[in-house]
Image (cartoon, rainbow, N blue to C red; front, side):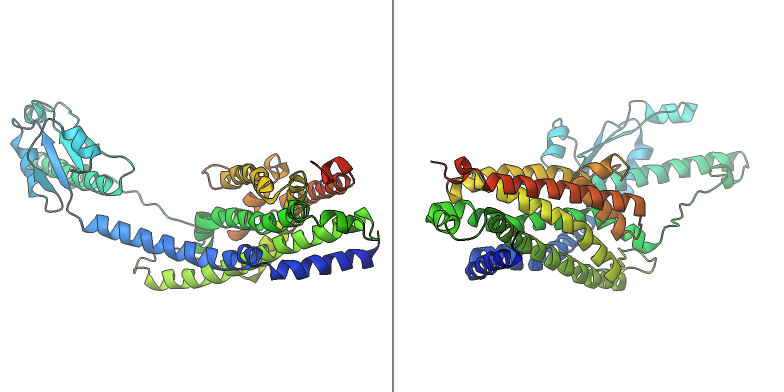
Length: 402
């Protein structure tokens, strides 16, 4: 291997890369703007949607209840809901969002209460629809208040204290630091975004330096130069790696600044109870995430360049690499799923291990054994990918496909 020759190839490819507006957009602008736009957009949208849902007075429908005026009157007296006239198509109205919930009171409900026979009132709603869930919540609170009032009256009639209703209280207390709570909330998303952007930054340079060279007819010219095939591959690889690395650096930097700003803004706007997302994404966490993404960028660069080399045109290479995006997304997004935690087995699965360890790092948890295993295993995968890339470049049947 001739380091000078590798440097010459790298400088040549770097000069051409900097002139390509398309690759600069995917490598620089996208990672710089992705996190601020994503975070501010999600916060703004969720704030607007939840605020709008809370302000709306949900329409509800009462099913039956003609023989139980007490509970019906309690529901009608609730100013947080609007009771509408009964209709046989109440299920369709809930699904079509014309009403938010329906309360089904069993026949003979009032008589059963007087006899002490327990009954069940069903609250029908649209699961997953936030306004319907708020409507069902208002109905449930109203029914619980009616139930408690009924029990209190029965206790008073027998000269018994109200404390019999609730002989003790329970209260949940969070012992985890606010930074860990905030990190676990969005830490998995950070790892996912860093992985996706690292791959995105390497796609276009990998295509341009392989299939793009073939399509332009410059591959033969480069191969005829007095540079060994190994030096040529490494020079091209370093350029693709630089693009992926630049994307990773910019995305991590943008991520740190964005969450530092958003965390500060959310802390200032939190209510007196201290609610809100608290983030403490310091320099140590940012550097650690970057170091864990480093061997993954090497792996992406080598794999993408190898796959793209099999294509004859730029468009064909894109069709090859598009399915690979889904292959990367599946393990990367798996860390966002609840219950998926880092363990020795998952520490050996590429992409998924990096996503999981980034999530741990954001929460301030450093399992050094797992970190070492993930870093070492990813380096091994990257070395294998580079070896395959070099061997692929030495195959004339691949370089000159017709």
